[in-house]
Length: 128
Image (cartoon, rainbow, N blue to C red; front, top):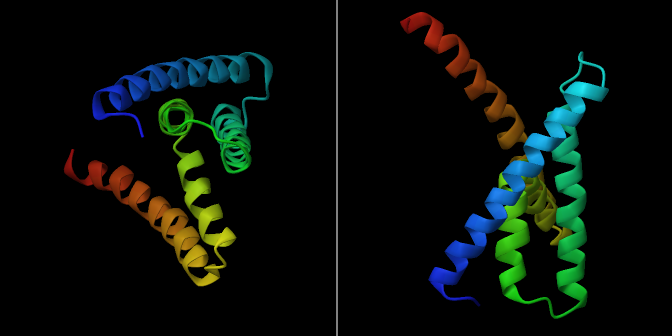
């Protein structure tokens, strides 16, 4: 496990890269894809989901240094898309056979996420 200072540097470097990649993905989507669907968000969520599965699979099959986890999963993918973290947690529950907790996780993240987004959106209109 990298020491705390090294972890922060890896997170910052990965986060910077993920942010730039997210921006470039959005620029590509805005320029080349139909504007009626939020393609940028969909692309980063799907790409992030695939890459997190790929990295996870590599980590389980090889002795990938823990530093790569900080850089790739938490840093790059964490800033590229938080959806990848949601998918990681959900797949972990699925992989562990914790189907009840998986369903709860899916419902809470999606249902409460939409509810809270709506409360924030409409709530601000009430107070401004």
